Figure 1 (cartoon, rainbow, N blue to C red):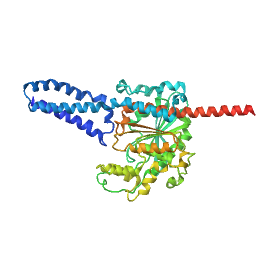
Figure 2 (cartoon, helix red, strand yellow; figure 1 turned 135 degrees about the vertical axis):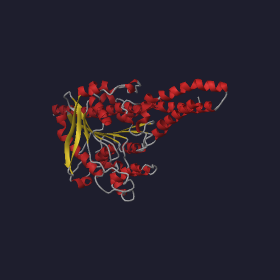
Figure 3 (cartoon, rainbow, N blue to C red; figure 1 turned 120 degrees about the vertical axis):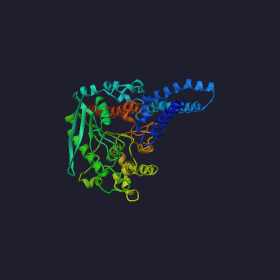
Length: 453
């Protein structure tokens, strides 16, 4: 029995290490979203331990009793930790709903077309059963057209491409131009986990352009302590995004896209690039790429940014606490220098630096989402940007999930994924239909004036 007690303790410690300590580190990512899939493991060990604990307690307290008691306490702690998101999700949902009503108006759903409103799940709530639903591969193949490797730009002897997803049913669908994450040094438009997310969005009635952009060179074991000064940097990445927007605007109708309702969508580094492109559209920013930029040419209807970098200087300070050199290398390679060498570049590459009274007139509605436990990009960055946007009268929604780490939305049907994607859909449809309502109102006013005169 002594070996059994030790085995129980080892299992309890392993569960605690993975789902408590690692989940709270920069390696944790979406572990906090897996609670319903895993919580039964510590629960089973707790149940199995009870009769042994009673038996040992009746005999005489001994080593096995204390080992089992320790493992049971640890398992109980892990069990509560795994289920904590599901204890918090209802309260979080109420807080988000209250924010939507405050920012968009109590009647914001009235601006959504009746045929769309049913798919919005008007009373958004978290569904436990949905956590165990399938990926819907059959629906993807039946209702979605997928086109891969559509070339949109050739530069530096390289052809950049994008993947396109859109409903098979003919129509004019809002456009989402998507940019993957990866710390400016890694990632791909073909990554399966992200493609699943985009296919889900296409099913809801969007045309998706999943864009490849140039990445900074990845560090190797021999270069982890070296400061690179080579290209591409964030400047070239934004240039690629700028080129992608212009390409999509020219070719949107070929893929049932509505260019008047074009949104940028990014995650992590991709979210940073989407915000930076939208906020910093200045001719000098693209001088190295020979691309002229104006707010009118690159205008978008809104930006969706999941856990974005909004202030590179703050990100650098945040990483000073981390021991992982790869995290710092992402900044060095994205900006091509250290803090002391490129303080000015850190500011140039920070979306929040471009918020001004003049720029506010050109910034569209912004949707931000982040996890409070994020150990790769501090949630404070999204919170800070959200406050600045609101102070300048720019429509901004910020969803903060108190239990979530970086990349939580990869688990689409987890507590964070369910809430964020439902509210994201509401936000997009609110913008689309508000614009349609304003156009219709303008036409009615013009008609009334023409009849009056």
